[in-house]
Length: 150
Image (tube, rainbow, N blue to C red; front, top):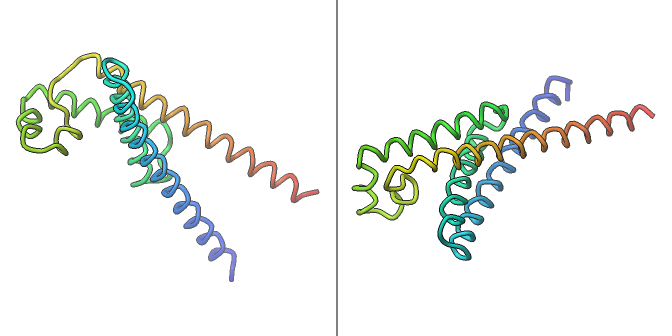
């Protein structure tokens, strides 16, 4: 195998592992959302769910595009969350939610300005976790490279 083929294989492997990690994060986020609804109610469940909604969108951005930088993924997740929230002002999501549980879960029903903050918190949490994971991964790679030079 020549060096370009090796590089391409490692790049493909990195994309696959990044996509797998993002998919796992998305599934864990859904589980956390269901869990918070099962054990809590009121503001904890509502606003925790809002933050997890944005975090789920963050993870889905990375499933679709694993090499996305944390700031970009957070911006896309936040913009999508806010777009859905402002879409609620039209009344269309409420009509759809009356006919479909899935529409209710994805689009919500009524606009609440405080949700905008919690979406930002969720997108920010995704950004922070993604950044920390990248630093940890780069640190391990640097340590492995130093060890191989010895």
